[in-house]
Length: 80
Image (cartoon, rainbow, N blue to C red; front, side):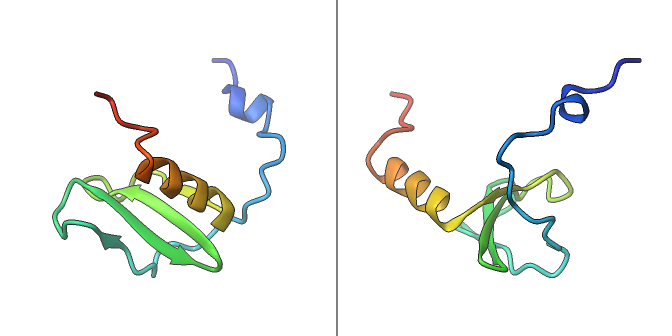
């Protein structure tokens, strides 16, 4: 079986640490399961699927998170 492309071509410019998220204080907008959760860890913002917390988390720098939130507030991701 061939190696995955990630193994063959690591992400260029990926300068984010391997964060220990095991003790992260995950927060949810609705308090329910199956929604997006975020945690602030070591100066970074982690985001995961609350319905599948064992799945990989996305890690954002403060600048990336700010751009994401600004875009969401501005309707950049609206599907309608």
